[in-house]
Length: 377
Image (cartoon, rainbow, N blue to C red; front, side, top):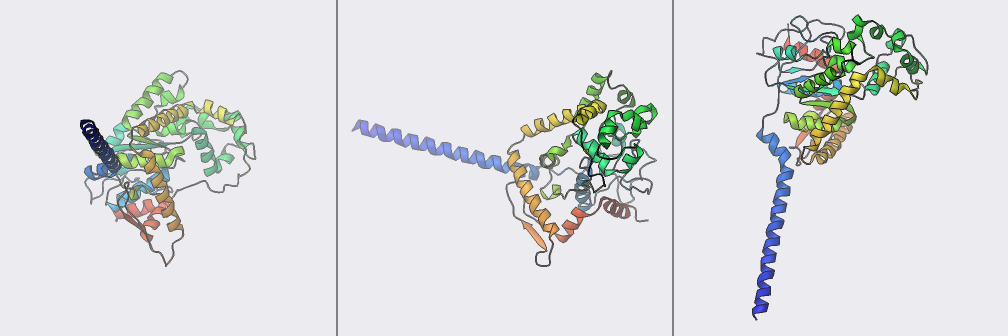
């Protein structure tokens, strides 16, 4: 009798322990899956942002995200002083100065967001932006960046006197022969073919001109950028970068939706071939860009590794973004509102015709719209 009773007691204890353990595991799982939304709810969204708009590195797509976020909240953007042919450019040769940006609008007390083309300089940026500004950048595989730049600005083929299927190979076999900005030191900052991304990240001229002998100094400068930028988006992992951006800025899923901007147009140079040694030649030409890209590529994945349930949220974001893009491309009278239900990653939200308009509006039109609002006179 005692043996039977003892066995029943052991069984009862085992059932209780197992049940408690299962409840604890379930609770922890629920707790973990709720963390993303809880963090956003507990902490205020970031509204002061400096985005370094790098050419041909998905920067116009990111800029649209910032423009939508800012206009919906009546935030103030830094605008160029001159009404130039390219309203999205503050300067291609220098950082922000009192002469190349407009003064703070009468309706505001400070600037909130900087996201137009200008060279990076932390000291200059800090003079016009709040102390709690979060700094964001973008980078792309340097060789792909170079090809994209050449195709997007086809006048460069005429300028460099290259044409036909071998145009890229001909250029890279002797770049100094074709591009004066490479061969003449005083034109180094004008270059769009050599270390252009490093130039836009504010690399000092002496390091740019002495890259072979100053590699340690260049690496120190890159590490300084690492400390100054909360995130550098890597184009080859764009959706992962945006989900990380959302978490850093405490934004919503709706805030980071996009329809890709400025994909390469038909330039009439479809027959361009890439030679087997072209990528290696470009690596030798733009070695600083490669150092920069490698550093922040590694950093992105180091940041992602620290995130909880990250890839699940990326999958959710890809699904929702595709649904929104399809809706906006096929607007009809029968369906004027797309309703996205709530999930562990997002509160429920709606996409309207107005949302679609702001997703697809051209960069120049969006800049001019903001400019007219901030400076009505």
